[in-house]
Length: 156
Image (cartoon, rainbow, N blue to C red; front, side):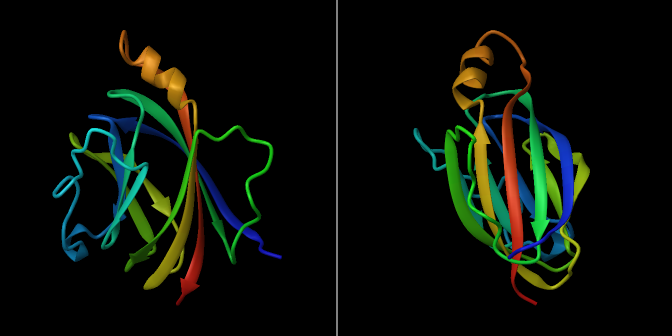
């Protein structure tokens, strides 16, 4: 059974319907955010790039909550939550840290994965999407859309 190693709760900015989790050392990232960002009418919830994960938000401009969990193996399935979006991907991290990126620049918080030079699997889930889409049309919502990112190592 997998064990939870670390948990963070971050308030993150979202702009232009998105944000990215990207290798902290941006000199290592072949295509840094927002380059090659998918500008589709119905973009996917999660789009993996090399050393970067782009997340599509339901709201244009707002502040979201990102809960990050780091596990020593594949975490248990999500139970009980009414998820509006869910996907999985992999990301390699040289430093063991990820930055939170938006079009306007880098957010202040860092995601602490812990182990450097590791390929990570992530399961990303979201709630509050319908509500933030509605509220973002008339204001700048705070904490309505919530993400949970569960990371576990694929290989060292």
